[in-house]
Structure formats: C-alpha cells, structure tokens
Image 1 (cartoon, rainbow, N blue to C red):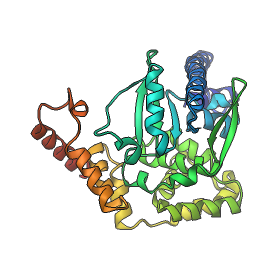
Image 2 (image 1 turned 30 degrees about the horizontal axis):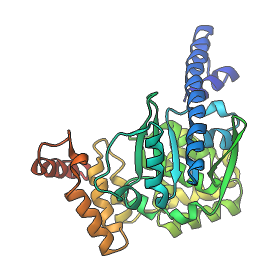
Image 3 (image 1 turned 135 degrees about the horizontal axis):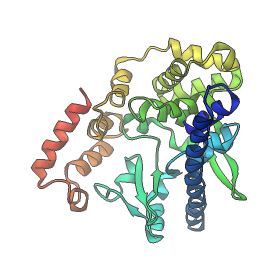
Image 4 (image 1 turned 90 degrees about the horizontal axis):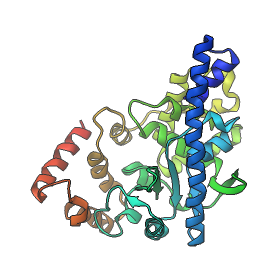
Amino acid sequence: MLGQLRAAAGAGALPVNAEQAEQARNAHRCVLLRVLSLEAELIGVVDLLTSAGIEYKVLKGSSFAHLDYPQPALRSFIDLDVLVRAGDFDHAVAVLTEAGFARTLAQPRPGFDRRFDKGTTLRNAKGYELDLHRTFVLGPWGVLVDLDELWQAGETFELGGRDLTALSRPHRFLHACYHAALGDWPLRLGSLRDVTQLLPRTDTEATALIRTAERWGVAAVVAAAVADAVRLLGVASSDVGSARTVIDWARAYVPNRQEEGRLALHTHAQKTFAAQALATVPALPTLRAKAAYLRALALPDREYTMGRHTSALSRFRFALREARKGRN
C-alpha cells in the first residue's frame, strides 16, 4: 500500500509532518526500484516464452499497474505472475529451467501441473520468484475457471518500449476477485483495492461480468470479493457509478452450502493446501481424472517427497492432519 500512502500524504488527504512525508517517499522509492528490476526481468521471461512459441498473459502486477491504475507507481508488487496454456505448461517449465530457473517444488508425477495444479513457482539465480500459472488458484475454484475463455481475448500494455499481453479487462477483474477472496488471510487491503480499481464502468459491463461469474460457477467468489472490498475500504455510493449494479448484486448474494464450504477452505487462519487439494476431487470432471489426481497425490514420485517426509506413512499422517486442520 506504499503507493497509496505516498499519494495520500502528497495530496494532503493523510496528515503527516515533514519527517513522515520523507519516510513515505523513501519507502516508496525503494519499492519502486524493486518493481523496475522485476519489470526488466518480466521482459526477459516474455522473450524466453515467445521465442519458444509459447503464448502467455501477464497476471496482476505490471498488468494491473499499467492498465488499471491512474499511475503505475500506485501498484507495487514483489514477484512475477504469468499465465500459459495448460498444453504448453511442461514446455514452458523446460524453457525456463534451461534458462536458469529452478522449481521450488517438484510436481507429484509428470503431467500433474498441466492437468490439475494451479501452476508452479520458479526462482532464478537473482532470487526473484516467478509464479507460472495454468489457472487462478489451487482447489475446486481453480477447476471452475474456463481456461479456454481466458485465451479468447486480451489487452496489451507498453513496458520498456515493448507491448506485453495481459488478460482482458473482464478477466482481470475476475482474477482480482479470486486473489482478494481466496488469497492471503486475513484479507489484504492491496488485493481488495485491485477489485475496486477494476469494478465495471458501465451497466452493460457489470451485467456481463455477473453472467460470466454465474456461467463459470464462481459467483460466490466474485460476490465475496466485491462485498468485502466495498465494506473494508469504505467505498461510498458516490464513488462507484455504474458499478452499483455489481455491488448491489454482491451484497445480496447468498452462497449455498457447497459454496460456503469451498470459500471456507481459504478464509481462516489455519487453511492448508492439503484441504484445498482434497476438495478438488469432487470438482474434477471425470472419474478418470479423479483417479489420476488421487494416484498422483497418494503415490508421488520420490523427488516430490524427498527432504519433506521420512516415509509414505509419515506423509499420509501429515496429509491427514493438514486436511483436518484446513477444513476445521
């Protein structure tokens, strides 16, 4: 929130003395130096992918800053997020690995990432992280994302004299809702600000967004993110204009029991990946997919468990504890 802090102090909206104003400027300057170095690295990642014939879309970070905020400096970030097609996922990992990136965690079995997971995190020699995405989030909500639809449209933004591709604005809004409602707990004010920054600008856009959320089956995620953003950021009716349509819908939305259960996997202090992974099984479309998913988690390759569990039994006990804790 340092960009917002500096802007508020500079505009006189937040009373500060001279020393505090200087502290805000210095802190923001340090963050922006990190952001600029990350954006330079992002261009390198895009070059690697495109030279290998891999289509990509920049997620969050630079795309929000340059497309959705009045000034890019208002939206800082600490890592990179890039989406690739599921069918290109293994190829993308191989290209990045050859260029010096290293996975932070192996996949349970070959092909698991491109079929089931959110994606994977890679780190390069300079120490920064790249989250390579197949979908928005781990768990049943990630399964419900219409991956084909994400690639039907996009929007470009200029970075370092280059045109980079991001999701379309409606899909950026949906991703912002995912990140705000299902990301960190307690909720992050910066993520909620993304939601308000991307609220629909016309009644037509608002209606289309609601229909998309309902068609995907993720209306509960969008409603939760919008209602929380408006409530916790104190957004006034006079601030939202045509976004009133989606805000009124979000406030009135009542999730069913299944939606409540799936939201609860992400909205408490003891949430765990094990509980989210287990809840993925009912959302998978076929029995064959369910069987492959369970087999990969129950009988993973040794590389996946190395250094983490002393035996299959200890891993099973750990997973059971984590699943229970995450569903509490």
